Length: 130
Picture 1 (cartoon, rainbow, N blue to C red):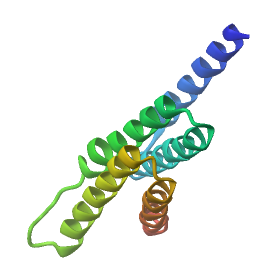
Picture 2 (picture 1 turned 180 degrees about the vertical axis):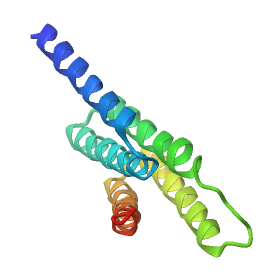
Picture 3 (picture 1 turned 60 degrees about the vertical axis):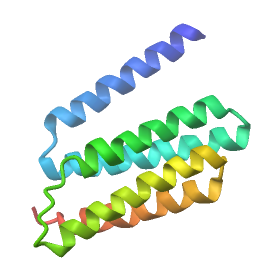
């Protein structure tokens, strides 16, 4: 059974690596939003199951995607209100994820997930023609 799980994970990793290698910059951002959504979803399931280790790992992964991926690739121009607001929103989502981990609070996970889904949906819609 363990070999099957290892095989499935290896297959998933190759699938993700293939998506990333073939993706446009716009698609890479979509993949980051999808990854954060998946990680937060896993954190919610782990919290409900009482698996605090898995919850913490999933929140850590989601937070890394937000901070290092989404916020990290954002070019913040102090003269551009949209970029400043988006950076501030990513900071808020990161803080919300950390609070969710600290307080074991599902509602904070849901809030972070919904905010990212909203931004991700707008990103996807805005890049359809690109």
